[in-house]
Amino acid sequence: MTPLIYILNGPNLNLLGKRQPQIYGHETLEDVARDCAALAADLGVETRFLQSNAEGQIIDWIHQAREDGAGIVINPAAYTHTSVAILDALNAFDGPVIEIHISNVHKREAFRHHSYVSLRADGVIAGCGTEGYRLALRRVATLIAQD
Picture (cartoon, rainbow, N blue to C red):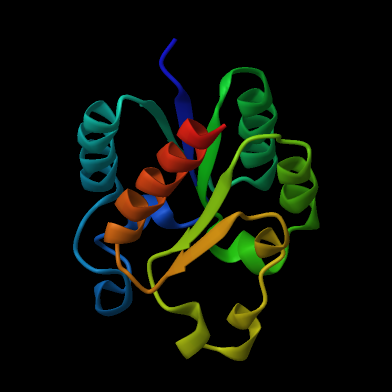
């Protein structure tokens, strides 16, 4: 059975390529999803690429990943800094979790320097642009193969 990796995206990432391109670049989320699917095929894994502006929906997807997912790549966006609920859901997931951020959150406003998600993440990638998704996908595939 091919391992399934969930790639979860939080609020406002549906506007990727349109919102603050000087920070987030010009690629759309659809571009990122296409690139991840192509890489996943090369890595021998499948991806489920999802985005929601609703915290509860992201939590539901994490719960679903407990049933059929081997790993999670998550860009929680603004929920990074606020959501204990997402942290709790990730703590109930047994596979590897990689947290990603398109921008370097440590060079931005002070409130962005704290991440609840990092308390669970097996790795954090920040400031690599949308390439961070592919880096995270490679890392999760490596961690799954080591199990």
